Image (tube, rainbow over all chains, first blue to last red; front, side, top):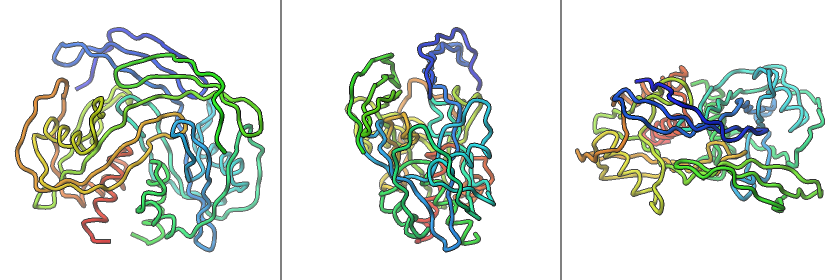
Length: 176
Length: 176
């Protein structure tokens, strides 16, 4: 099923993403063009308090033209692994450190053209620990997990990592 | 919270995606750069048989370097709405038409830089109806919905639309 790379053209090398356009030979012998957006990967984390609340962040997202309510998340730094990145993002976005983390899922947001992989965790045993972030204009929102889950069902939480994290966290908490 | 656009530079205009780089003024007055990948949006659909099986497709995904098992999906054509696109993709990818569809979710795969929106549906009352596709090298896989759901939990189904579609379809079928 694999494709053979014929030619690759680099279009853009950026801070968050890069873009290349590949010409590939299909198994049938025909050629096709693949626009590939390169991304280092990201972490996302469902931070759970002892009372069963989750801590979410509301922020403006230029690509969507509005604000979104999301679980804390961010791009991996160069050479950074996911467990380190999730603690960094928790400290930068909600001022917490997690004593306990559990992997929930690893997923491709849009595998048709995007190399990004997102590692999703559940985090508990939170203690205050703040890191200053370069660019974080966000509001922290605390909600009972079932209420956050209901916002997924009502279409009020609508980004992939938050939907996946909250659905799977609900299953973990329910013990299924 | 909104950002004010200062300058926009078009980098690439492609078939599936385009890329622009915006300079924006933050509420604080500082400026920042936003790399924005533009995408027309996509549909994804969980096709359910009367026996409670789902029909999935396995295909090579150049951006991931391997094959993925996914629910049928595809990019909206220019001017096409989601209900039309989902019937087209069902016909092209699994040779079926749905007599009944139900909206499950609408989500942003990666809202930090990507404008793509994905509309996810459950489809039932399937009848044979094939459309020839320009470029579809894929294998159809039929599985009981609970087995597909177990593959999500085991990390064997790992793209956002399929995880979200199968988790929410499972909830709909279970009547929760």
